[in-house]
Length: 330
Image (cartoon, rainbow, N blue to C red; front, side):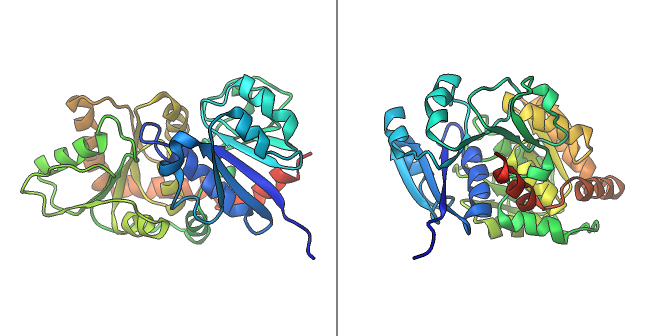
């Protein structure tokens, strides 16, 4: 009888308010370890229906009502990965002694306790921002939390190659301000005639003059890559989406609309990995600013080439190698 695989527990939540970003990241990490580790996802019972499915279908899955029920699942030999803003110091304190390692994915550089290591794939980030020298840090695009197809693409796409036609627009599953929709509407009003690929789970009413618009929902990993590759540029927030585009070597316009995107935006801007337009609210002035930036990039071959060259230098696609070193940490 063969040796039982070591177990990794992934504690995360996703819903219509916070979107699927945290779940998507941990799903990407899980896929890197599924050959050598038993993978088990745990979410709150109130989020079970939203979380169960495409991103977790390959692994075992549990929904818990409270902290006590979660602790009952744990074993002292488990490696626990945690991604979310509601896992407080008190929460970690109660869990930390129950597992072998607790690895925290942290978007906001803040002093943390009761963790073995902190993971943050923001471009250009340094450990000084976290202000806690006693913890191990694994930072930057070397640790990009991307699904396998995106990492493979990064390894293959090692020379700039501009291609495609049209604009790909995606502001995630939540998009509380309907920014994606407003950007698409403004593109149509401005008379943009090339294809517009708009990804959103929401239903919208479109004007009659939208024959060049294709609204897409619930795309698989491969479908997402296919439509991004079909486009000439993309417009996305500074979230996991932006890191995926860096891996695919696609010129894009980015902005941020919530605080946890600000640091990623800053890293992308300083590393010149995209065309950047700052914070964006729901006002039409801000929407028009994004659209103007997109149309400027669309016609600027020199800028697109510079962006893709910087992307190639910044993200190698070798996350698996760096994650193996992280797990070897004692």
